[in-house]
Length: 122
Image 1 (cartoon, rainbow, N blue to C red):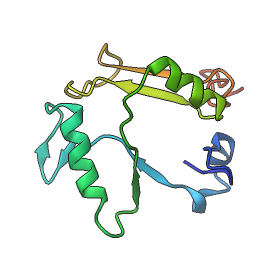
Image 2 (image 1 turned 45 degrees about the vertical axis):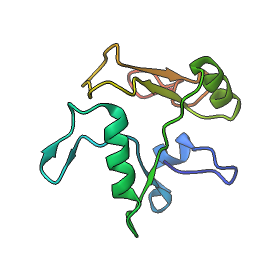
Image 3 (image 1 turned 90 degrees about the vertical axis):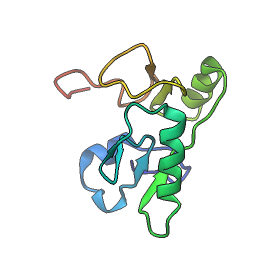
Image 4 (image 1 turned 135 degrees about the vertical axis):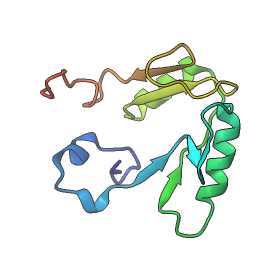
């Protein structure tokens, strides 16, 4: 992601590739570590392992903290702040590849990322 001065991600700048030196990597899940497959562990345990890993000096990746709140209220705030959307995951669920009932992605309809069509145009 690339952040604007107000702290909100800027999808257009990221997409342009002219600002690659400003890209920041965010970690929100850990599926494997040290050869161990973590996908069957609950999200809550995977987040703890990721947090421990990213607390090391010079990790180079920011941890996306887990928030427990009303999804509706959280989504409203994310949209009001100009975020692209939210992803909700069950904290007790193992990793699920692709679309499944254990996680939901909600896009802010006003976000440039949500306005893209399948062919990449707006």
